[in-house]
Length: 145
Image 1 (cartoon, helix red, strand yellow):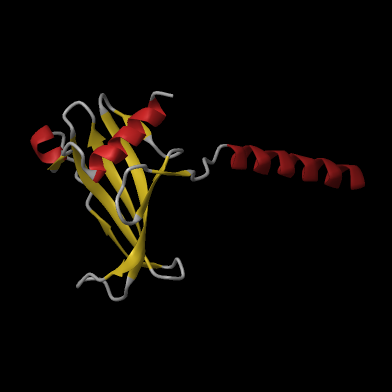
Image 2: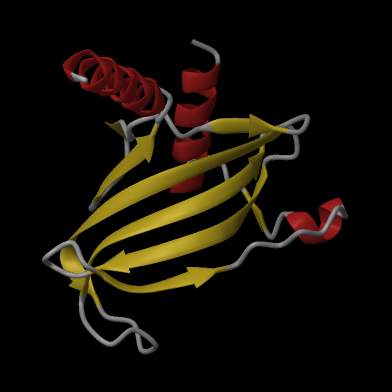
């Protein structure tokens, strides 16, 4: 009986170790050249999807809390998911999560667009010298390593 318990315990430990090994931990790397708030990209979460599309999450720590009319309290941190097309130099906002001073989610917004038409899929141009270009460059550098 003790042997069965011991073997089952080892099996459970191995299965849970394997499951945890497959989960990618967030790894936030600072985006250089950004003025003002600190901006990071989760380099472990950058995914290249179809052709020239990239999905990436950013994290921005606000030195001065943001106040937005539709959000009930001050925003100290923002996580944002973007869809980039590096060939077209365009992007779309996919999701935004706002946090308070205690790292609790205040509110989140989902802007996912499942359109296959490129005219509708990417809402904004990546402007040279902009914060968005710095984020896209960080993603491309990470993918090309």
